[in-house]
Length: 163
Image 1 (cartoon, rainbow, N blue to C red):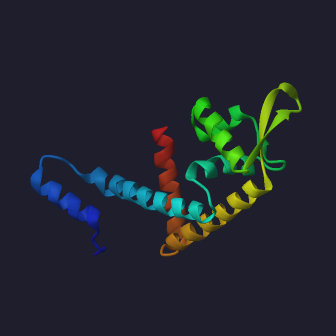
Image 2: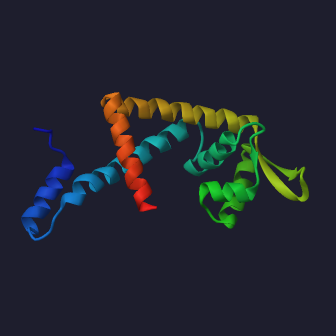
Image 3: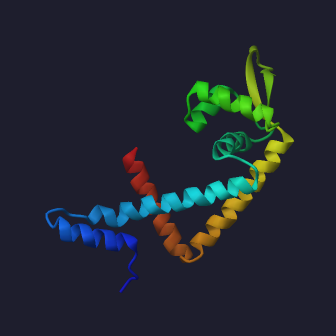
């Protein structure tokens, strides 16, 4: 018999109080929600070790994944980070002040601007992703590779069905 967790206890209590409802979705989605909170805390910790806020990691990550020379337009950053243009402008300003990124004139359009990651930004995002991958690998190490692949496939299906 599988080990019981807090979700089992919550569902048991609700089932006792509301036997008219089917609590089957909570078996999956409550665990996903709880795991998401746990991962969010772990990610914040990994970013903090690298001296980054989560939103800074998001911007630097988009730039790093763009490949050398690690630059994107503000519009591309808005699209990748899913924030408003006003929020992105504020974030870029703050990151320029922290020497994580630089603003440059777009060589293809003198009226436009690009955001380019600095060496400091690259060092910080690389440190954060290294820590994050290490920590998340340790979390998943309790589960055999085949189970990890199956879980990934099932979560992908759930994610795609929800889009």
